[in-house]
Image (cartoon, rainbow, N blue to C red; front, side, top):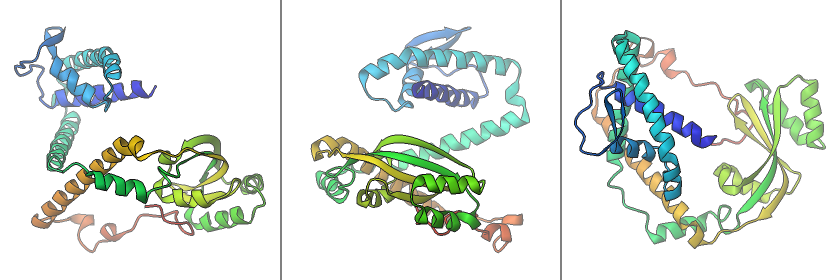
Amino acid sequence: MKQHSKLTNVALAMLLGLALSACSNKQDNQTPAIAKVNGDTITAAELNQAIARLNITKADQIAAAKPQVLKALVDQQLLVQKAMEQRLDKDPAVGELLEAARRQVLSQAFIERSAKGVAKPTDAEISDYYNQHPELFGQRRIFTLQELSISVSPDRVQEVKSHLDSSQSLGDFVAWMRSQNIPFRGGNGVKPAEQLPLEILPKLQSMQIGQSLAMPAPGGMTVLQILAEQNEPMTLDKSRSAIEHFLMTAKQREAAETALKTLRGSAKIEYLGEFAEGSKAATKQPDSNNAGLPAIK
């Protein structure tokens, strides 16, 4: 299901890319043709680009994905041809979407180029990260959790948390929420440490089975109760690849943020109308449901 969703996203993204040219004729491409759709060619390069967007690296996964991705590209080309036939690229609303997509592609390309010169993490950096986060590696655990997603307004967050703290059990807390007509959804799940927010892991590590933790969430709060846990430590050698990828991504993100900060510093930026400096719209802070809960940044 997840793989199918990725393929659909690739098709939509590539559709935007093709439509940006506002023309069904493609430039000459030296890579071999692998399909033709009413005379329009799909090349091996286009297939490889689409595969790259799936972020899969194993040879067997790539081989299995290729026929599906090619089918998505064929379907996409059929849609593009029909759209061009109906001159949808001349529609003002479509034109605005294409321009927005063009800006997104160009800005993303600049970000990726800015991050290209970043050095790979050293062995020392990888070892340091491993040692600094025992909850993810040397003391890694797998948790069985009861999760409650609670919809509550900001002015009631503290009240709900107080009742959670004073309840004898999670069942008593749930009964109280029902008596108050507070909407919530519940479910159980098994999650290894790396699938949980890093900010809450130290707290979970110190909790006993049966204890609960409340944290802010969009539209309300989330409550986690530990039902069971087991130790599943990971060695440095086994963790090395994942740590290297994480650190590399962090370095690239930092390089992109630095480049953007430099651009902002040298640019003349003016906010107009309701967004002018000093206006209420420019200074208004977003509403928060985090009152009384630890910040998760």
